[in-house]
Image (cartoon, rainbow, N blue to C red):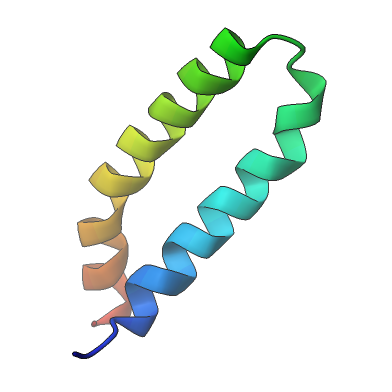
Length: 55
């Protein structure tokens, strides 16, 4: 089994940013909605980011 380091770094950065914002959101539903939105954006942006850096 091999790991895609680029993908792991990308999602680590996205999750880190999300974790930094999560305490400001007081209700669980807001956190879930923000997490879903960030996940969609991150998944959508990963192919373009990989192409940009030549991965």
